[in-house]
Amino acid sequence: MENQNRVLYISHGGGPLPVLGDEGHKEMVSNLRHLAETMPKPSAILVVSAHWEETHPTLTAGSNPPLYYDYYGFPRESYELEYPAPGHDGLVEKVQTVLKGSGIESSTDSERGFDHALFIPLMLMYPEADIPCVEMSLIKGLDPAAHIAMGKALSGLANENILIIGSGFSFHNMRAFFAPDTAETRAANNEFDAWLRETCSSREIDESERIRRMINWEAAPHARYCHPREEHLIPLHVCMGATGRACPEVFEMHIIQKQASAFRW
Image (cartoon, rainbow, N blue to C red; front, side, top):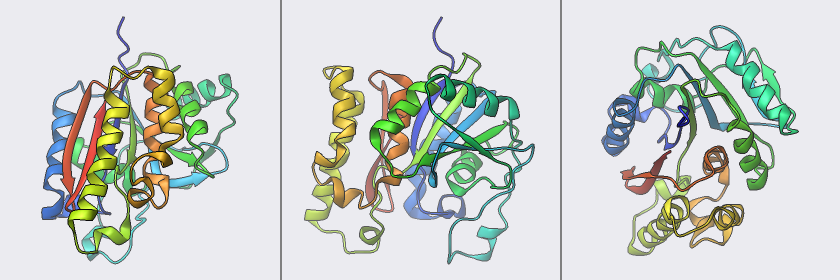
């Protein structure tokens, strides 16, 4: 039987701008809506957030996590957004069980709310907020191999129509977003993104080589230009670990005038 759990790596854009009608996010908004419209509605969603790092993988707990507006300097309405999705204690327990089965210690946090890596994309994908959600942190230190191992553990979740989302951004250089766009910077952006798409989706790369490339992602063309710090890339490592195969669907788009990609398994 085909695994009913689906895995996405998405580029979630700049703060609340995608839901405020920002012109630079039109392609991203369209992509997220397309993703939701072209797959069965999940029974629960697990979001691995680029905006949360802990010593061990940590999961939101509680029946109704609040929103955590982890962005600054945006219009007032940005801090009045609502996404009252319920939590899911059963999914928390299942995730902790599969992590423990792989020798990975984990924790829960009953006070932390959903950050914008969860509520901004899900406002666009599932605006009814009627799907139970759990958010999971990255591991401090951002070790690629540790996050691939975390993903492999998540592959042990039972086939219960769970959607796993790695919520990051395939290009995340904050200075570059506000700097002049030149032929050189466009080439650097495009070359790294092409490397990323090939690494994730090429069937000519075997899994051991795919993993080796992702563990050594800093050797990719212009890697540190595109990711001066890699917290927005690392959720992709979790997704790759959870799937263990070439990605069959790759989506290219421009977000804030930068080349970006999303992946669906």
